[in-house]
Amino acid sequence: MGDARRRIPRTDLLLADPRLAKAADDLGRGVVKAVVAAAQERARSGELAPEGVADEAVASLPSSASSLREVVNATGIVVHTNLGRAPLSAAAVRAVAEAGGSTDVEFDLADGRRARRGRGTLAALAEALPEAGGPDGVHVVNNNAAALLLCALTLAPGKEIVISRGELVEIGDSFRIPDLVTSAGARLREVGTTNRTHLADYADAIGPDTGFVLKVHPSNYVVSGFTSAVPIADLARLGVAVVADIGSGLLRPHPALPGEPDAASALAAGADLVTASGDKLLGGPQAGLLFGDHGLLHRLRRHPAARALRVDKLTLAALEATVRGPAPPVRAFLDTDPGTLRSRAERVAEALSRRGVDAVAVPSIAAVGGGGAPEVELPSAAVSLPEDYAVLLRHGRPAVVGRVERGRCLLDLRTVVAASDDRLVEAVARCTS
Ligand SMILES: *Cc1c(COP(=O)(O)O)cnc(C)c1O
Image 1 (tube, rainbow, N blue to C red):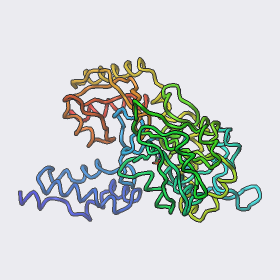
Image 2: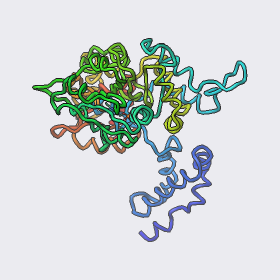
Image 3: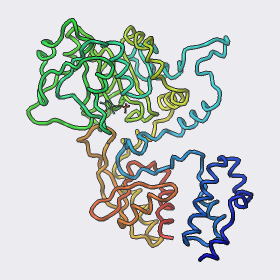
Image 4: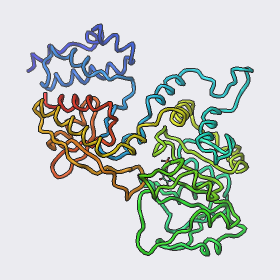
């Protein structure tokens, strides 16, 4: 053992290996050194022969200098917050790569002057949502939480935000919308009860102190039974600004998600401002979308905090390509019919069986997730594997994350792009070797 340890190649010798030297140029010396140190450590613990350290280090080189690892989302949860929510379309990924250098994000190449930041993205959103009345009816910030924060900061400092007790939402990781808006210096004026709120409750609460009425879509839970909530169209008649947080960012209704609010309907119903996320059902990058009244949006844009909440060129590029380009993966995840998913699951399971894996295609139920359509079950199909695969697949490259149900590891194909099925087969097959 001691002798084997002495034979472990030194770091400087390993870094001189042409393959690792090239990787240091591509990925940075620090990244390669960390990989080398991990391989040496494995040899020290006896897991690896000293002669294998260089090859092991080469095999473990990451594909980029970021520690974020690619994951195949086979959970069946369409918008999985822990897995980065919406995967970008190939067109959006290309747009991000191109915007990574210097770009005309705030510059007019025709006349050589400063131009409106992200104007192409605002125009794309305005075209996708004519109800916004043009680019002045659109604003983009860091995320939906930032959109709500900006509304509170601009429209209700020292004033009251009137909200139904049935819509006091915790959005995840212990973040609560009521706490978010009060952190901006607004007071909350809760009206109604958990299950029932009426127009009169709002009307009684409105007065000179009112900043705006906030309508929040209870996106991650449902209150059913003896319930009543006030629709936007009624709130819009109260004579104060109505801000509607629709959550998941559908621009128009989706047939598979009848209970999910959308921006076009909210604006048509009379909401003064609509806020939504860009990386949920819209299928784009993390962003907060604001649509609506041009005067109010002008005030939001001029608030000093708007600068702190603005998005970068990469987000603007990805968002525009999502809206203008081919439908993003989230759209396919929602729209693929169960029969197609079943055939794909059978193909994958057969390919794996031929390679000696205990794999069978089974029916599955997928979900929207990410705080959206909590009651909707999307019929799906999965490849069922022995439970041990769950851990092995998480450690693979790409990592694959499935669901463990009743002692089996299920890989749900509703959230896997069809073009990745073969990679999925390879990833599973590698676990057995
Ligand atoms: C997800 C969600 C938010 C938070 O959006 P982020 O983009 O994550 O900041 C706010 N409100 C509702 C209703 C949501 O569903």
